[in-house]
Amino acid sequence: MAQQTSDAPNRLERRKASTRAALVRAAQTFIAAGRLNAPILELTQAADVGMGSFYNHFNSREQLFDAAVEDALERHGALLDELTQDLDDPAHVFAQSFRLTGRLHRRSPELSRVLLTDGLALATSDKGLAPRARRDITDGVRTGRFSVRDPELAMVIVAGAALCLGQLLHDQPERDDAEATDQVTEDLLRMLGLPGDQAHEICQRPLPDLA
Image 1: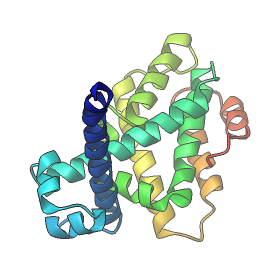
Image 2: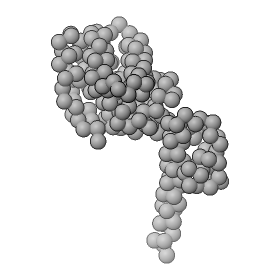
Image 3: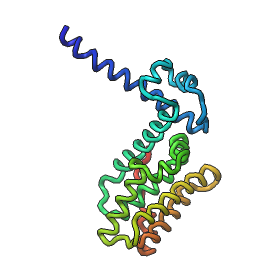
Image 4: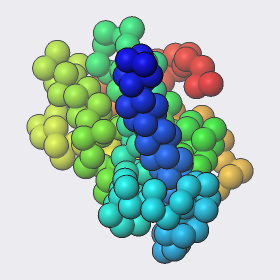
C-alpha cells in the first residue's frame, strides 16, 4: 500500500508533464503555420486535452506561445551543446553552431518557423543560439581568435544574419542552404577578425550529422 501511495504523485506529475508537453507541441504547430490568433479551444483539441487542463498550466494563449518558443530555443540550444562539446577553438565552435543552425531551416522547417516567428526572442533570449554565440564571441576575444571592439554589437550583427538567412532560405527554396549558410558564416568570421584563409578553412570542415 505504501508503494502505491508513493507512486501516485509520480503518476500525477508524469500526467501533468505529458499534458503540458502536448499543449506546447500543439502551439508550436500553430505558430509554424502562422496561426497566432487560434482560439484556445482549437489548441486544446489539437493537443487532445480538455479546456480545464489548459488553465492548469497556462493563464492565456500568449503564455502558451511564449512557452512554445522557449521550448524550441532550449531544444535547439541543447542540440548545439551536444554537437560542439568536443571542440576547443571558440572560432570553430561559433562557426559550427551557426552552420548547423543554418541547415536546420530546411531539415526542421516547423522548428525553424517557430524560432523565426519571434525574431527578438531568438536574438535576445538566454536560451538557444544567442547566449552560445555571445559566449563564443567573448571566448574568441579573450583567446585572441577574434578582434571585436564591442561583443554586444557584434552579437547584433550575428543575430540579424541568422534571422535573415533563415527567412531567405524559406523564401528561396531553390537556394542551396548549405552553401549559403557556409558563405554567411565565413563572412561573419571575417567580420569578427579571423583571417580570411582561416575563416574559409573552418567553414569547409565536415559537420556532425544533424539527425
